[in-house]
Length: 108
Image (cartoon, rainbow, N blue to C red; front, top):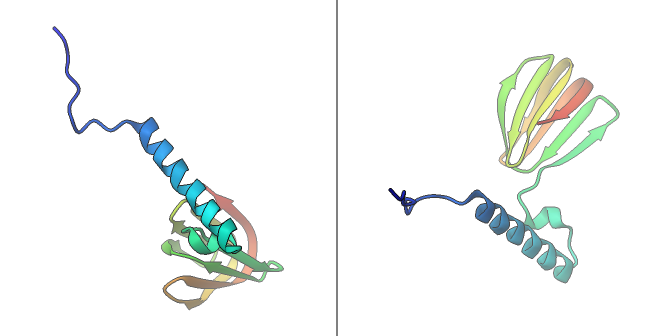
């Protein structure tokens, strides 16, 4: 007996190739326009001032928030921030400012 593949079967390798092509096109467009690739892509940009302030730029979602632990979901990663006395000072559509004593930043 022969088993037929269902039409809705998704080939994961094909999806990966499609995503890789999208990233290459974004890089080509950025080079042509002479702009950073972060502007075109849906990347997250982190800026840190010593260990006292962390600035996120890009789409993000706060999943957990405590004064010693903050978990943020971005388009590509989950970012976990460990620290002490951390507070969210500003929060906008595409930006987030965290102040406090930051010990560690982990990407998952």
